[in-house]
Structures are given as C-alpha cells and as structure tokens.
Length: 144
Image (cartoon, rainbow, N blue to C red):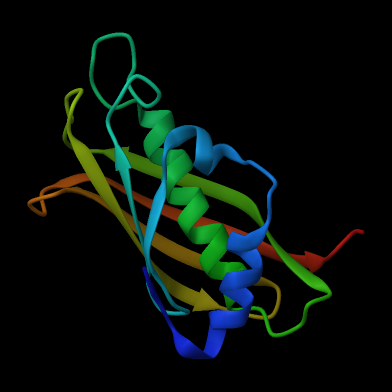
C-alpha cells in the first residue's frame, strides 16, 4: 500500500483500529492513500454480487463512499472534525461477473471547510469504466 508521507500517522491510526466495518465485509483492500487520490480494489465474489451473478450496484456505491469518506477524513487538519456522507449518486455503466475484481479511484473535486466533493471511478482491472459516482461529505464537529 502506498501512503502519502504527510498523512502516514493519520492513516496508521485508521488501519490500526480493531473495529470492523463494511469495508472488511466487502473485502475492500486499500492500494493508495493520499489527500489527492484514494485507490482500493474489491473482488466480485459472493459478498459483492447480486442474485444474477454480477457486481451489485450497492457494493459499488459502498466502495465509492468508503474511498470518499476516508479521503475526506485524511484531508481534515482539525481532529475535532469528522467527514460524513451527505449525498452520493452513481451511474452504473458496465457489469462485472463473479470472479472478477474492480478498482475504485477517488479524487477530490472540492475540499472546503464545510463540505468536500469527491469523484469516484470504479473500473475493471484493464481500465474499463464500471461505475462513476460523486459523493458530497459534510464536515461536522466530532461526537465522542
């Protein structure tokens, strides 16, 4: 996994937690962690397909929001703040069959004090577009 040096300690904090989350259930594997690009892979398996044997759109959206949420959090300088999903949309372009895998690539479009907007492309291993999403995150005060 590639991690941007300036956020390594924050990324280590995230990945050292024992708390399980949806990313674990879906088998999301982070490949690149930076403030300007998040990248992760996900297998198309029994946990991520719909009943007809192809990648479930909800799994694609979960991958997209996971990348955007983590990326937004890594961009926060103030530890008293959190980034939470406000809106996400997705267009599903191409199906991927059981046994394949996808890569999600998330990049920030806007990183403001109150909101962040991220674009997430989900592609096949050979770069064909599977899904494109835009996720808006609200920057809020953390609750303990």
